[in-house]
Length: 301
View (cartoon, rainbow, N blue to C red):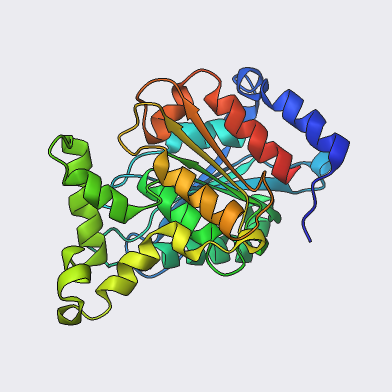
């Protein structure tokens, strides 16, 4: 059973804010980087970044598993932040997955679960302690990450999930993309959510029988529909005030977890920062990267 260790948590969280400033001249020259396949599909790959854990850490270190954004349609690079997190003392795995034109939902969640299984099976190669894993997802990758957190007993799979601008409600994204004042990015998200489901949401209301499984797919894509409280992994969900994926996506998930399913009040933390940054760009906003590392440290040290 995973536990948080009182005083140690407070100490780790206090120093975590200094990590990004202290690691610039760290052992980056000794960093290991490699690419691996965790499945047979060309996109079922991951890039690993890690420094040797050393005897002072018992030969093991916590891990961060990153799920990229890109409207489920394209990959967004995470190499720079992966190296930063690795030099902060984590084994980092930047995971690719089948995109929406490769396979419909839930293939993307399945790929994330398969990648986690592969990491556990090869943990010794990266000095990673698989009892101390956190998922970090951006935008559409945030939706996949929170879907992992709420799938089955997510709390026994990972110690937590950080999601940056997560599209926790693709159906809301579809509705927002149909609004008269919708932006180009909102329309792109709408169209790619439809491709992910392989059916148009209007069929759910009008003629679902013509598209068997359509309603079930859209229901499963909306993360709060799988909320189960204490069985789900803790989550830190961050949006900007002007995010084109509004914070309501995460507030609704928080309400489902804490009000409807009795997750502890600190089980889901939703935060809004100033500006209009989206996804991974949030890490460049003042204090956000330190906040994320501090939250991860609380759950993995």
